[in-house]
Length: 246
Ligand SMILES: C[S@@+](CC[C@H](N)C(=O)[O-])C[C@H]1O[C@@H](n2cnc3c(N)ncnc32)[C@H](O)[C@@H]1O
Figure 1 (cartoon, rainbow, N blue to C red):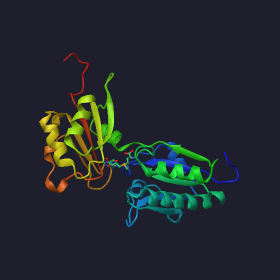
Figure 2: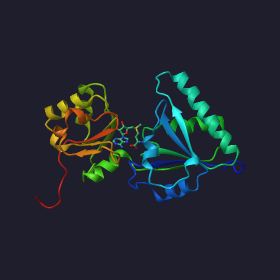
Figure 3: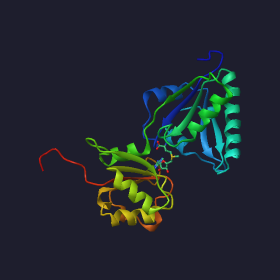
Figure 4: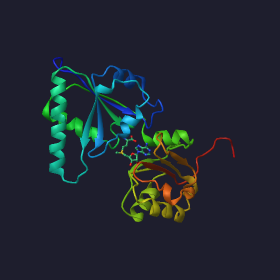
């Protein structure tokens, strides 16, 4: 612990402003000198910020961190270094900084790269990370969908590029959490029909946010309701087991 500096906290928030935040994270947020809010460059809003909209934090404590979308690793490294540099300036002023991230901080989040850049620039930095409720956990709870029973295998999978790859993964596991579906929904649904397991699946779009869709009927989605980036499908090869003898 570096006592001459402030602490960097990373907390999971959401999904959505549904009070899905741990007591520890909420207490930490209320004591923040600055709340660091990641958002995509060029965007005026932030999903993470929408998740804490009902929590009374000081508006002037909010600072946006803009992350550009790019596949250029060198460019991205320089961005993460710059962001880490800015954060370190504040830590040296002994400020306590709370970085909010949607769902769990270590499930597919820019948070992990930010932490790595911070540790590189400032070995010995004081970092505390508190877990959050992942989008797929919120979906499974909302629709009473058991993800794993007994010794079933659960795979968390960013949607592959082809139906053949997805089929292979489904065949190897009992349950799949399918994330980052984007514009692949059409063929994903076709594959689930072909494998005769669509009836065992559920979908959540914009879970906890405005225009949320939570459904057990993936055929009900109209063209306009196409899931897009903020969506998750939970896939089971077989229906959940019961213990009532039937
Ligand atoms: C960058 S990852 C962030 C995951 C996040 N850390 C979590 O624990 O859920 C983005 C993916 O998470 C899922 N996701 C995050 N928030 C969501 C929401 N509110 N509704 C539906 N899916 C969401 C989607 O699959 C999306 O493609």
